Length: 324
Image 1 (cartoon, rainbow, N blue to C red):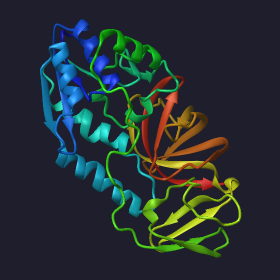
Image 2 (image 1 turned 60 degrees about the horizontal axis):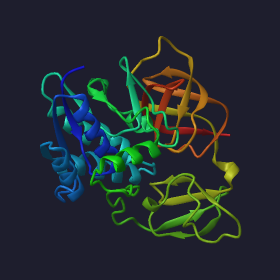
Image 3 (image 1 turned 135 degrees about the vertical axis):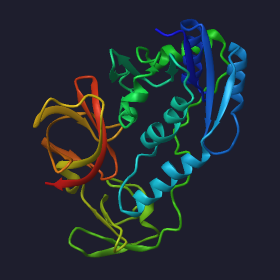
């Protein structure tokens, strides 16, 4: 192991404990706060770094964040797709910014719940907190420099250790999107699967495939099935109408490419969704994924992560689905 590390610090309990563990693992440790919104360094990040005697650097990534995440997300929404800003931000802004600052033989340390073993990215030990899905679009040249000290820990262990060490970190977790995606959406029609007009919406950007809340009352529980950016139409239907037999994936980021096609693997199409068995083939530069059973609410624009057991092979973007 190299003897120096650069730690991505947010001031939350996970990155704060990762920084503390890094000071035990390495002789020379630096910390960096990636500022994406021009808000300055969070008080907790500064306090934790000072408490541990580690220099804290500030990286101005505001321009990259606006271009690569905010503007990109709005563009994806305007196409009627559901973006995954967090996965995009890891790959194009936060970890990339940290990687650009690395010295020779310096490791990147983060508080992600994932494990890097012999060059292979694996799921974190805590199934409720595993974040390998959000790392699936990050290039192997970056992940190859990463160490995830929390990967073998459960969340309660992390909190207990942080409290025992007296780390002055933020106790609450940030679960909200860190920017506003809506930007003057135009009203349009809400229709059922037969094309019947049910009502109006105030902007297509407010909806995502599989959404139930915020649709209004139509006499029964309804779900968003599709978004038509050209017509500005939101189509809704029953839960059974969300079922798909497969999907097409593009922009694939391979961390461990398959030996050949077709092959069998596990695929995960949303963060909180379980990984399911699938048959994966390739043609025209795209992956074509078939589910043995029907899957619900697979949304174009979302990340599709591919696994062999607990090992992440890579991730790409869902561009279309095949309905039952």
